[in-house]
Image (tube, rainbow, N blue to C red):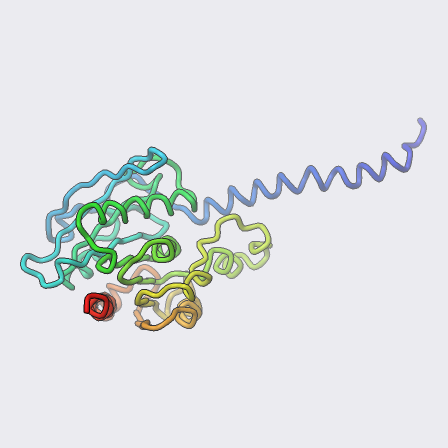
Length: 287
């Protein structure tokens, strides 16, 4: 058998990596998606568990996805009835998984709209970074068409939702931004969780809140626990340092999903701080 020519051998050396690298990239992308999004479809709680009725809302996105949402009105006669929190939840469960958070926020006297991203709960579609941005923008526009002024819309991001809420604040006028137990970016947190993988090189999902914060002019509140074992407190410190004034850093207690169990008062205080800062900023605009 005649030996292969040198040019064929050299071509094979280049061909194998060229074929293997796209496969590795596709495998990493599937792995990345499975780590970022953990949607569930089953209802865990109802508005009754929040302690007040909710309007069931269906949102239609520009790309024809139907999203499920709940709208809670503030306390009757509340002087803060003009304010509303747009709640962007974390990567696990769905909107029905968080009645304790809604109850705590509603204690400040504001209204609240919570919605499921595409692929979560009863919402249609498959989650992805661009899609979640579209979903949040759709929820924001629903609030605008229902009479809420931009200065009275407070965008709240829990964990993964922080990356979505910061995008709303960067692309729409809002009255305030809450970053609850969130990260600087997906590549940053991914590199910490999987240090043996070239996450920052291969990551296609960004949710880069840290990059957006210096450009925001609305009040920003960062809430995080030093005991958080999922997203380290250093992410909160970096986000807080990047944000412009007015801003506040509120220390929660307990692990990532346990701030209400560990110290509910601290959580409510953070919500109150956001509303107070928004009230101050809003009064300056209307003078």
